[in-house]
Amino acid sequence: ETGVTQTPRHLVMGMTNKKSLKCEQHLGHNAMYWYKQSAKKPLELMFVYNFKEQTENNSVPSRFSPECPNSSHLFLHLHTLQPEDSALYLCASSPQGQGVNEKLFFGSGTQLSVL
Amino acid sequence: ILNVEQSPQSLHVQEGDSTNFTCSFPSSNFYALHWYRWETAKSPEALFVMTLNGDEKKKGRISATLNTKEGYSYLYIKGSQPEDSATYLCAFPKAGYALNFGKGTSLLVTP
Image (cartoon, rainbow over all chains, first blue to last red; front, side, top):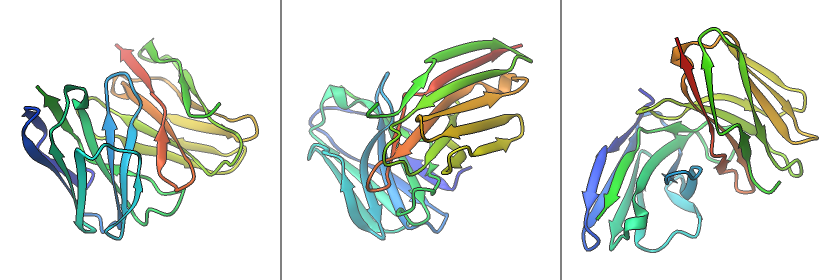
C-alpha cells in the first residue's frame, strides 16, 4: 500500500464517451502527477500539480483534461479519445514537487482501453 | 545522450546469481538519479535517489553506484531471488524537476 489510490483499475470506453480517472493520496503531499505508460515506451509525464496549481503540461492533447481540486485529489477527464490513447495511466505524488531529491509515490494505475 | 537509456532491456538469471544493469543519462546539468522497482500488477516503488558523484547506496541485497561525470549508474543485485523479478526503472529530473524515465530493465529470476 503506497498511500496513493487510483480508480477505476480498468476502464473500457468508446471514442465518443466521456470518463474520468480519479487519484487520491493519503500522504499529506503537495504535488501530484499524471504519467502515461504505453506499450514498449517509457513512463511519459503528462501533468504536474503543485499546491493545486498546474506547473507542467507536457504537450498533452486537449482531449485529456486534468483537475486538481485540492492537494489530495487529482482527476483526469477523458473525452473523444483515440484507440492510440489506450495505455496504463499512473498517478503519483511527492512531498513538495520542487525538489530533485523527492521520491515519487505511485498508485497502481488505471488500464485504459479505447475502442 | 539526450535522455535516460537503460540496458539490457531484459535479463533472465537463476536464483542465487548476482546481476547488474546500467542506466545512462546526460552528464551535463545533472540534478539527481532515481531508481525504481516495478513489480507486475503493483505500483512502481522508489529504491534510491542519488545526487553525488561516486555515491553508493544499498538496500538489502540491492546496491547502486553513480558516476555523474561520465553519466551512468549501475544497479547490482547480489544473490538474486525470485521475488526480485520486476522491471527496474531509472529516472532523471530535467529542468522543472519532474522525472523522466527510461524504458527499464525487466529482470526474471527463476528458481
